Image (tube, rainbow, N blue to C red; front, side, top):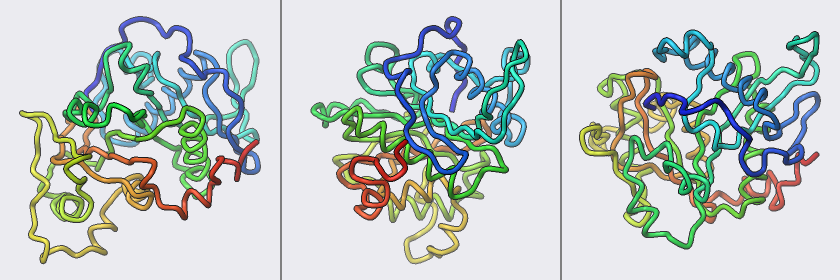
Length: 289
């Protein structure tokens, strides 16, 4: 995920910034960020996960602000999971619920009024968008959760929020980059080959890594695959996408700044496994506030 410098200070939140709570489990609540300050706190969470816990390389601005930010943040909606039982001190003696998880969402209509999708920095999306001009696309990205909250409840609430957002904005297709830790594709040969042979998108939905960034995923023959070991080697987010019915694009991309190897996820809403739609509710009502 190549870093992009912020073009201007964070401005007004995009459409939907004042939407109500999307779901609750106990003290945890999922909702959209309502203020610029909340977006900055989500960026602080991303910094802790991507730069302090993982291997992302910070530039001077990122080190100074201790926030993971780029030019897309001001035009995106930001899903937050907050813990009301973990209040944190803020400025002027105030306290606020701790932000423990976040997801960044960019709708196609918003992207087209600005500089397009973030994923287009790594994958050629144009043909896909042209083939499905009647569809509404949503980009998912910058997903992260604090280590102490990486359990079922937090992940479930993040997906509750995404599903409610998809229904509210009548989204047809979700896309985005999903990452493996590490920049050596040889060490990722097994999971990359598994995705290539078992989860590659059909031609109608396929996207390809950009020329010059393309990394071959077909590193093992199908008969050499150990499916159980391949799945065990995948990050939870990618496994979650596969369970929902996501397809994977053609070719991976090495992102040296973030220390990752990225694949492109494509997930038409119509192909989502019915068991998950039933679980969260056809109207996203299972965890509704």
